[in-house]
Image (cartoon, rainbow, N blue to C red; front, top):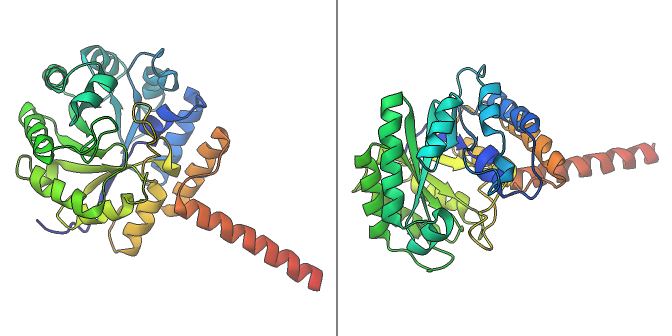
Length: 314
């Protein structure tokens, strides 16, 4: 396994981020956010979720949103479609890519998906078969690959087994999710090395939450063993509504800053990301959770204070 010099980022803020926020962003605001993310250079954006609006009112209008963004060229727009009904709605809205869900924890699967892991894999199989017939590609998420809020530690061999099955089913990419952010670099690296024996490394992605501040370190550990795709969320949005205590996804701005300084190419503009983060966090009524956002805000405050001091002195 080699260290990739080009890294693809999958922006999940409009879906995985906003679905956990208490403030519901209307379609117009979500569309503006996605347009700003695309303008910053992100070419892979998960825009929403085709689920019950009663369950997740934050994702209401995803079909309308998908159609609104149809003119956004050069960007892979995807949406979560956790079952066949969701896939049918996604296809009707013109979604060229969908994402599906399973978990490495039986308890989490039952609470999050209302079914067992095996049953969730059958749902995935049904979606993949329908997607193949309709010319739609499918990306898969495995939740709780490094720990579960209900069961604690997760068997890494079970993660590898599930990833292998998803690969055999026909998922184009498998995102390995540290849903509650308990993983640290050694465990993240060891997990990927085992999973890569069951599914090709170039089909794997990393999805890290930053609950214990380990997300960036985990990403770098996975880079070192050949993973070249990572999920992130603008402004560090989100968490997990089914995982008590889980903080937001790793912030896109922080990932881009780290990769840029480490000579990895993402094709993403950091200033454009800061603009997108300010836009959505202003709407939500809170500051961005990213380290980059906090550092830049502090520098701006310091610069204003310094300018006022010089004016008084003059």
